[in-house]
Image: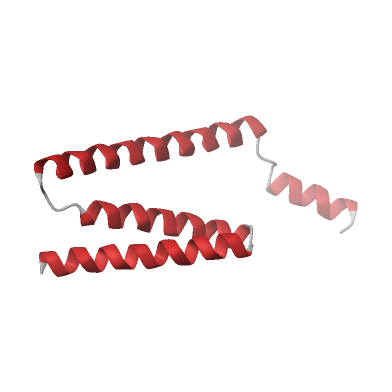
Length: 103
């Protein structure tokens, strides 16, 4: 690219502010923590009351499977691939258990 192309590209696509990127990352991280805490509280309530809980465990493993799948797309490694496969298997297992019990 020549200088003119670079300037034109930067005018059309201004670089993102590092502060905004950091804040968005923090928001996403804290949202995940809130989601998981809510999931754990509902799980504990269901276990204490004796209700079926496979649906919440399936949601948890599905969440982790999606998280590790996208992590693998950006940072491919054997470890991430292994964790992705395990979480997908656990998601399918608990989803199947839930569907069988609810059918």
